[in-house]
Length: 628
Image 1 (cartoon, rainbow, N blue to C red):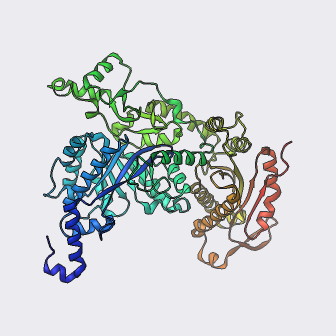
Image 2: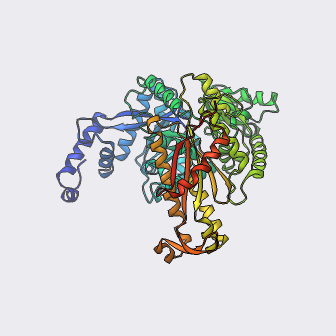
Image 3: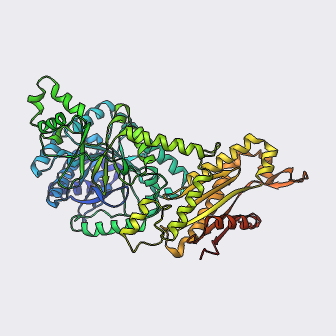
C-alpha cells in the first residue's frame, strides 16, 4: 500500500521509505514489547506493568512515536494496534507474572470499522489470560471522537470484565472530554504536571483538583513520569494511588529477570523515605477481619456464604497471593440471583466474572484524613460501600464508611477546639505535641510522643537513619503598621495568604501550626535529604517560602506603595515614618535531639531579632545546649 502521488509530492521520498518500512514491520511482525512497572503509592510493591511497543532497532521505525505516526499517516493504525496487542499478551503469558497488565489502545481504533470486535477476548483465550488481569489504556486522544460511540465501546469492554484507564489526563481538551464521556477505572496524570511538582505550587493545585475529581467519579489515579523522590512524596501526599516512572524502573524487555532487582530497589527506596507519618491515626486501625473469597469460586458458593453470614455486607475477592482483585457487594450479588432466571444464568459463573473489579483500595498506613477524602469523594451510593484495606499490597481487611466518618468527626471536633479561628490551622496544643514528637524522633526515641508507625519501623530496621526535623518560627516584619494603615480586613487577608503559601509548601511528614496573630510554626522533615545536603536544602526551602509570600501578597498593596517599596505609617511610639513592604522572617533550628521544647522556644525568641535584622530575613542554627 503506497501513498498517493499527491502525498509523495507534499512530503517527499521519506514518506515512501516510511511506508515500505511499515509494510515490512507488519508483514514480519517486527514489534516487541517492553514492560514498565506501576507501583503502589507507598513505593513498596508492584501493582501492574504497562506494555510499551518497540519497533525493530535496526529500522527507521524503532521509535514508537515514529512507528505509530507512520501507521496513522498510511492508514494502517488498526493493523499495528492489533499486532501490538497480540504481542503484549503473548509475551506477558510467557512471563508468569501475576500483576495486572496495562495495554495501550488508541480510542479511534475502537471506532474504526476495520477493527475486529472481540479480538482482545480471543487473544486472552489463546494465551490463557483473564479479562480482570488486563487494563485497556486509552491513549493518543484524538479530537473529534464521537463521545456517545466511545462510551458505548468502553462500556462493552467493561461489561466483559476489563478495567479501563485513561492516559495523559490533563494533556488537552480531548482527554478531558473523553474523561467526561466514559467512566474509567484508572486515570493517568500527564508527566508534564508531575515533573518538578514539589517545587511548583500551581502544579500541585492542578494535580490536587484532578485527583479530587477522579476519586469523586470512582477512578483511581496513577501519576506518570516520576523521576525524583521529592516528586514521589509530593504526589503521595496529594492522594495519588499508584506511581510510574524512571525513579522505580525503565521499561524492560525482561521484567521477570529484573524483578528481584526491582523488589530490592523498592525496599531500599522505602527505607530511604521512611519518616514519621503525618499526624493522625492510620486507616489500618479500622480494618475488619472479614475472610476473603478466592477468585475461582462460583457465584452460588459466595451467595451461600452471604446467606449464612447475615452481618457481612461485602466480601473481598483475592488471588493466590492474597492480593485483592475485586469486591462483592451483598445486595448486588443477591439481587442478581433474585432476577428471573437469575440462578440459571449466574449461579455457576466464576465470582471474578461478576465482581466489582476496581473497588477503593487503601494501604493500612494511610491516614484517616486521606482515606476520608477518597471515600467521601465517590459518587452516589458508592460512598456507602465498604473499601479494601491492604498491607504491602496484600489483603488486610475491610473498612466501613460509617466507622471512618465517625472517627473523623470525633477528630475534627477535637481539632476544632484547638484550631486558630482565622486560618483553621492547629493551635498551641497541637504545636507543643508536634515539637515533642520531633525531639523524640530526632533522638530515635520510642516513647509515647513518637508516632506508632515510626516506632514499628525503627524496631524492624535497626539500621534506620535518625529521623531529623527542622523547627521553624515564622512571623511578619512590619505587619502591625500594615494592619493599622490598610485595615484589619486587609491584615486578615495577608494572614490567610501566608497560611495558604505555607500549606501549599508542606511535604510528607511536615507540620504547620498558627500560634496567633502573625506568628506561625512549621516542622520540616529533612530525613529524605542526604545529611551533607540537608542545610542547603533547608535554606532553599525557606527562601522559596519568602519569595512565594511576597508574590502572594503583592495584590494587597496599592500600586504606588508597591512602586515605592513601602508606605508611611505610625510606629509603636506614634511617630510617622516609612515602613518597607511586609516581609516573612524565619528562625530555623535543626539538630533537635535532646533539645527540650522550652529550649526551642527560648532559641526562637533569642534569634528572632537577628533574623529581622538580616537582609535575607532568616537564621538557621543548631538547637544548642542539649539536655544532659
